[in-house]
Amino acid sequence: IEYDLVVTNGICVSASDVAAYDVGIKDGKVLVLAPSGSLAEAATRRLIDAEGGYVMPGGIDCHVHLQEPSLFGDGCSADNYETGTRSAIAGGTTTIVAFAPQQKQHGSLLAALEATHRLAAGNCYCDYGFHLLVSNPCSSALADLQRLRADEGVTSLKIYMTYEALQLRDDQILSTLLAARQNHILTMVHAENGDVLRWLTDQLEARNLVAPKYHANSRPPVLESEATNRAIALSSLVADTPILLVHVSDPGAASRIREAQTQGQPVFAETCPQYLFLTRDSLDAPGFEGAKCVCSPPPRTEADQRAIWAGLRNGTFAVLSSDHCPFRFDDDVSGKKTCVSATYPVGRFRYIPNGLPGIETRLPLVFSARKLELTKFVEVTSTNAAKLYGLYPRKGALLPGLSDADLTIWYPQGKEPNLVLTNAMLHHDVDYTPYEGRRVANWPRYTVLRGKVVWDRDRGGIVGQKGDGQFVKRGTSSLANVWGVVEEAGPFDVEAL
Ligand code: URP
Ligand code: ZN
Ligand code: ZN
Ligand code: ZN
Image (cartoon, rainbow, N blue to C red; front, side, top):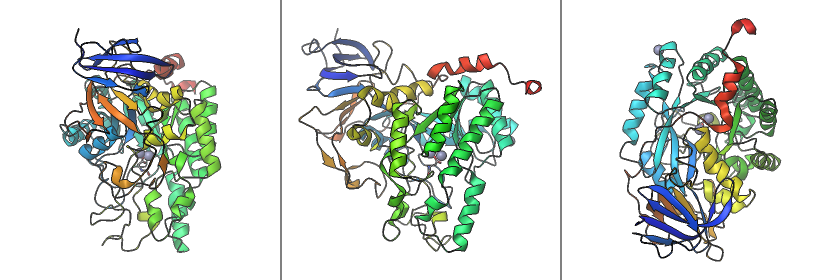
């Protein structure tokens, strides 16, 4: 047998084990895990000596916004499918799931998917899938869910409880959950109370409190915990329809999620690096610089960060995603963070587009923080994402014969780059990183996509091509037997309430 690629002398890390193995790769798949060193002399087209560094399943980032229309005026988010996925592989991520936004007027979810396929096809450096972003859950749109799952490989959707253009009423949420339940589709929920935050924003504006730091005042933790509680209640009302609370920042929301999980409800949660590494003080930088850290929910306190780390360790959070949704700080394109344009002449926090870049820094920042066991790190950044979104075990694992040969290989002890993060190092199309100046101990040395080296930090950096990334059709969520819980709960029966 001749392998296409052999990785020798690595320490393989999965969600359950840390053990020295050589990896033999053929036709884009992991073919064998062999005793360490045993493949060093094997016939192979390419050999990588990992020199004792960690070898992990490639990072999976299932919360990524690329080329999405801005909710704050004209323009769209800064990275397109080319630059966003280029940034992904440079940071060790081999699969993303991005959003296909429904056009409110057109309604059709299949049309939204088609339009997003056109943006991505041939442009991606890593593999990719889509979630539907549902802003108008009318019956004709929800009727598309069946084909989305059965024919298109789209098995998740996202809904919003905030943002004027996207916010759903509770009855619309219920209709969406019921249709998702019938089609075994996982519903991601952005849980912030949009009515309250609009009211608080008006209160702040009336007092001329409009600087970026007031973004945090407009979105206090209770807004998030209230909406989280409501989402959980609505899910239980529709006979335990599975939901995933995205970008959770508030420990109160996390406690409510944990309580629901303890009661056996199929409630899952995600958090993001911004809630581990930024605080609301980062919104209070000189001038308008605080805008660089405006995202929703906002970064909170250091005590809250500690609680979110604890929630990752104890399993409250199944996944750690980036929520990469960048806007340039300052250029001539509308949608920029400075929001000084003809439409928005004064820099008011209400008009700062929400979202941060973070697709490339997610793995290095969290790995370097050394606050998670290695197996837990792989679980929340890769394996659980694959299980949650129906990609497992093709993605998120190194199972011989089953898994794609998607790898992140780190520098070994003694060779860690130990660098200071600067925006100039990154491969996104954004003019800043909120993590400028931060020290990271390690960085992915190689990223391998289906057996092809696409990132080689010491020899060429990005060595893959756009178009290497393929669309991945997804199956239904397999995490914690989520549809089994649904079967057990029985069909939704209004007479039984
Ligand atoms: O501020 C954020 N999180 N922007 C991205 C869009 C979203 O709500 O996920
Ligand atoms: Zn319609
Ligand atoms: Zn969101
Ligand atoms: Zn998001």
